[in-house]
View 1 (cartoon, chains in turn yellow, brown):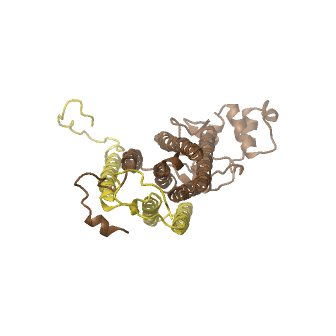
View 2 (cartoon, rainbow over the protein chains, first blue to last red):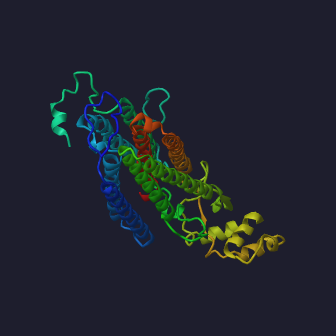
View 3 (cartoon, rainbow over the protein chains, first blue to last red):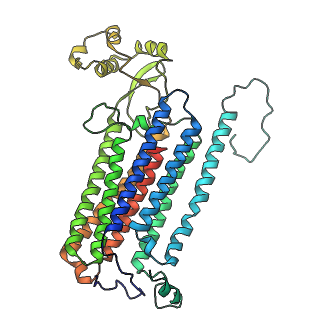
Length: 144
Length: 292
């Protein structure tokens, strides 16, 4: 049993720490298993690329799986190792709600990057074969 | 859990922490949140750039070496070792926090030492990886001449190139290539030759000695790879380093009995939060650079 003092007077209650380290080791084995699965998928992707006519959709599906596995690892590290799962709901929310901004962040920028690629492929690699009208005047200093 | 107690308590009426946690712990969480956005910004910037290009480097070719294994092709092997080292040091850190909850000074010391060693091992691995990339020479065909390039922030020798398709181009370039580069190409395919034995030979003789089956020639790849790789892994490595320093200070304070005197080991918990964050960032760096 723990007889340690409460670390600060603002704390209302201290939840009892676990007696044994079983949970910790279980999560370690789980994280290791997830990592091994990710590495296996990585090697599968490597082998797909080595073969003839790599199936790009399949590669994309595998990469998606790897992302989901990484999110699972992140969940276990934050919830169990960092003990966020043991804190009260107020604190958990102040961490998770702002971090959910990442969903917009990632989506917006990946769409942006893809748009760059589309535009570049569509307009940058043509050799001009006919007279094209000069672009309409836009804001000063705007680049094409 | 004490959710009943949590629901009955008036959290926002003053006199208590509405998060049921000490100021220091809450602030550590908020610092980690800000750091998460910083790393997230770097990684998303990297992702955006990659999505805007048609080609990128193949991580399985760039990261296929292992210390003491020479030229063997071991894709992802070394980085897997690094990941396991960091996961394991994370486990020893949680165990240290666990021992702290039970006021077990010796236990805390033992696990902190293991965590520190894990961190130092990770940094050593990263140092080897960087050195290997920065000093590794690759043959690149550039403007009809073959030259050697390292992987740096300005040069990327990992472009896509099919040697069998461009065989004639390479043969032509070989005759325009300076002899010192040719000598290196010979040395890579013929392990019995030495630099001395090749010194006097003419360009023609050297080209005859090169075995194009063993030596590979590439083109320059997207220039931004080096910058992104070294910057993000470097920033992460800096966090690992500062984490190791913090852990050493925590170990010393534990040994001197500061926490014993204080009556609680919450400082170890806060250092633990930082260390787990470092591990978490690595999980995402590993994902972005090596897996996808």
